[in-house]
Length: 113
Image 1 (spheres, helix red, strand yellow):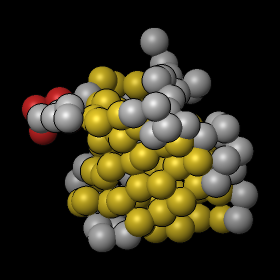
Image 2 (tube, one colour):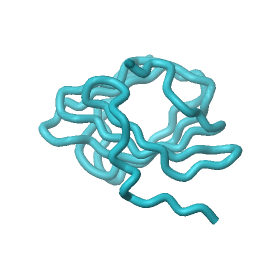
Image 3 (cartoon, one colour):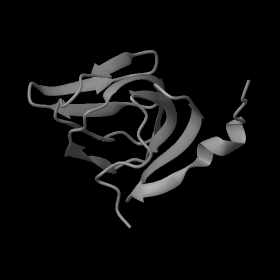
């Protein structure tokens, strides 16, 4: 068994105000802790990975080809493989959640250096 502590969830800033941290991962799936600060946006992108997740706190506006959906604490979500998606935090507190990607992905293509 491999245990990952909550201390690992601070994460790396991958875009302005967007933080990702690696949590547990295996050969077929990887779990990420994410935080999107107020006013920050996750660039619209797509990837081969299927992505599911769960909102812990704050609100986040998911942006897809079909429009916008507001995600709130307790909501779960699914982005299918190759589905265009992004997100914006239009609220006044950080949006925090957990995402699982299958197959695993190490770094997002849209990561800013």
